[in-house]
Image 1 (cartoon, helix red, strand yellow):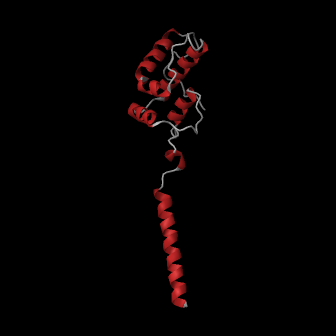
Image 2 (cartoon, rainbow, N blue to C red; image 1 turned 120 degrees about the vertical axis):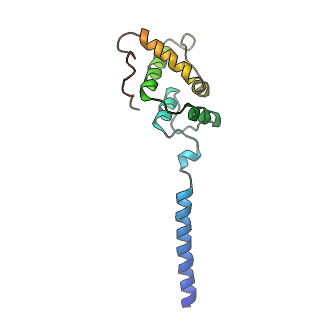
Image 3 (cartoon, rainbow, N blue to C red; image 1 turned 90 degrees about the vertical axis):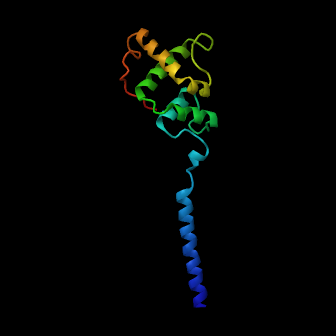
Length: 135
């Protein structure tokens, strides 16, 4: 009986170690669902009125990763530019309507935002050192 009890305790201990190892190697639930986890990705998702729990497609994730590091100042310029263009209406504003297209054309959108910041009314985005907007 003692041998059986010892074997059972050994089995329980091994199972606990196994569960701990599985817990360490499993991806977090957010990453498994392909939802934006970085602050920059969340701000871009918000720019397209997406919930932060909405998964991104594989092509969107690939395009986002290809961009590398996006500075907060650059993202702030694009956010202000998009706010201005969307205020003009769906047909008159010059802005991307699809997240993947936006990500694939990030450099062009940033150039537009910088040009806009040079001609925008005072108080918009003349300075590229603006602090990032808090979500």
